[in-house]
Image 1 (cartoon, one colour):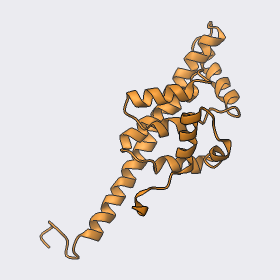
Image 2: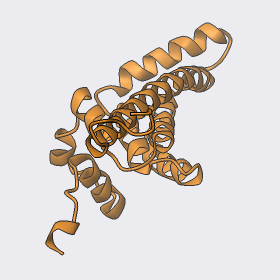
Image 3: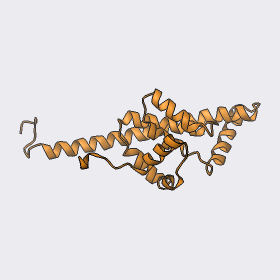
Length: 173
């Protein structure tokens, strides 16, 4: 049927192109680079609140680790293994891009040196990346999960109100 196909959002198009061709389509990616648009697109992805929140947490954790170049592959593999949303994980990894990598890695290095002053640069990046990545993942999971649950609850409430008779159901009315 003509109406059975759903429209693919820009974030899904960019992910699908990357996964199928190994190349990012920067024109499509440019459509989702603003924080507000990216958050809106993630919240509209299919999946349970847990799967979406876990996907975002995986992506945010990997965005802070010194794995630039293989972050998307790691995000897809971890999301598949943990039954999280792959699209949400890949979208969240995109916060570390060529423009944001320097500030992110400077912060992770600073945290790593603060925690382990006697460590070399690789260990400092790793320690700082894990600590900041865990913080970002915890915050990201909590925010996405809470927003998705509220959104699902509001949708359920709207559906219940529209389907129930005026007098109410199950309340003695």
